[in-house]
Length: 387
Image 1 (tube, one colour):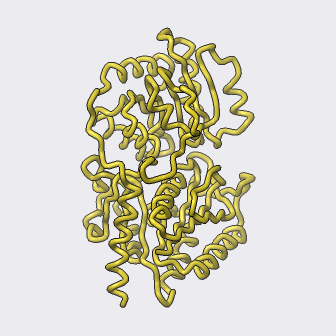
Image 2 (cartoon, rainbow, N blue to C red):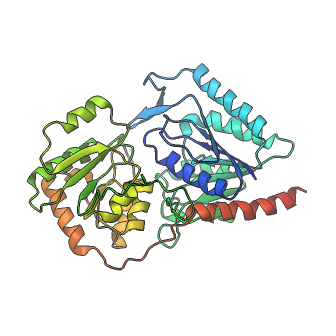
Image 3 (spheres, rainbow, N blue to C red):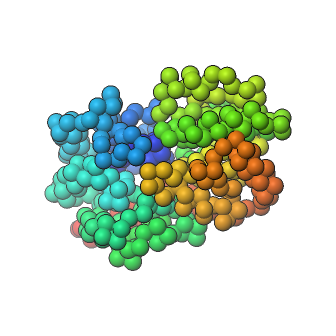
């Protein structure tokens, strides 16, 4: 199949990371995959996948309706028009069999015009592609009126791919109107960077880093500073002899990074995010993180004792709900942002170590493979209907 994926990350980079994993799985099965990405550039590439960088958009935390360019200036209409033109031209050139749109219509309201133009162009093709919506396990809570509008826009989609294991997290847990499109809904399993199916992200060198360490991470880092400073304070007070390794994402600029690195206690290392993050987790004493989708899936895969501090500011509900569910499954200890300080963090670490299960039920983590399988099966039916 010729597959075109549209993905837009605005704050963190998790959406792009997940779609790269899906693209890799599809490319590994000999499909031709193009990935249109509209956020700030994120280092890395996927073998066999052509990645097309659109003029980037970003936002500041809590300001999702104010789109900014790479220089953090408000975008003008001609900037958005250039993105739409690039997308349209690429659609005409690629002539995909399958179009995957990430998040929309369940989000990305700020670039609705761009995506609806893409969908109209796709439906106008002489041999139109099968159109799929790709969403993660939990959606941001919306009013019933807003949900009904989203469902109405699903008329343009042939299927909805939810990257979750419904035995753990069903879409009904965060969206009330699922019954209206259940006939289009497919669960792929959680998308994990499974070394059996995707390129291994590890450095290839076993440094031993992470062994008996407390590993602190916050994804891309856009909203990470409170967690980082609390971890440094906890490291300064800690008496358990463990080394603390704090990973800083690219969204924290060089000036802020330098400020964080000043006056660190001797048991604390601060460094930029590493490609062997999963290996660090597999060896660590405790992981401390936020509750982003990708991080939580890697925590489940590694099974390490975990403290999760979900991002809950600016009206965000997704991470809090995910953390609550994982704690109910015995997979972590949750610490609310309002409780975040050095003493509470140390207490949560002790609790995570005490309550860590030696045997833990693990959800379906083969979502990249599952997505490819669903698309192949559904495209075969779609093609037969069209002929």
